Image (spheres, rainbow, N blue to C red):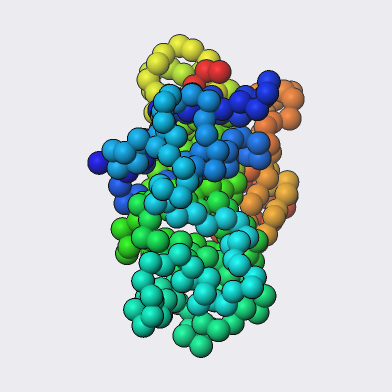
Length: 356
């Protein structure tokens, strides 16, 4: 069952096309992440769902109720949709308790009890109830904003880059906290972000936007492993992309002969491997390598537990131009030094990218 359905949503601002024919289903209880570069239309789409803006054409339904179609536009305050913006948007003249309790229908003791429950649910200490927003850290402000949104018992929660202003360590902790809270509450969630790692870790469903279009959607692992084109491959992480000749389920390329996930024969195509699919081993001249190729480590980018290496492949034939440079992810402790001769082999299948 789907909580939210978007059908052919379009939006223009004068001659500028902001959204073009967007269709997406958001399953009940899921976490959908809309990701894309700046200007791709993701925040505009989120504002359409919230009811802050309206499309020029298309239809939105929430739990079977029509929010927008050609004849009807339900205003934002009637949609029962929670919204947490990037900066939290807390009322500066209200305490933490007053911010969380804003709009609650109950009064008196029951209201105070409900505020206390919400503060506990987002792991805010009861002693913080009388603090002012400017006395809170960025993470605490985001928890208050989330509690305020949950107080309305929304049918759908919208998160507009809520972690982007936080420090890296706090961002990861808040992301896990929010994911757990929303899952426990059974609230269907849509997050907008431009952070690829955040999108991949938070999402049950990932939707990639580019230039106002929805270019691919599905499970995060599927999009990471099988992007539909080179732009998506590189947007979602480091990628090794190279030309190859596809024949009988194998790619013949600078890395040698690699199995592929596409069996179309006798054609040239672009293939993609993730850096973690490349393995390095010390090269012994007496060894017989049946797969892979020789290379030299030319650069090291050490980052603790991992090290990103640049390796230059040896030319396939003597006298050829210098070989292709590739990025390979290695263990930080055991990464070979610059100048090392290595043997490069692959794990798993290469992905054949669609023709543009």
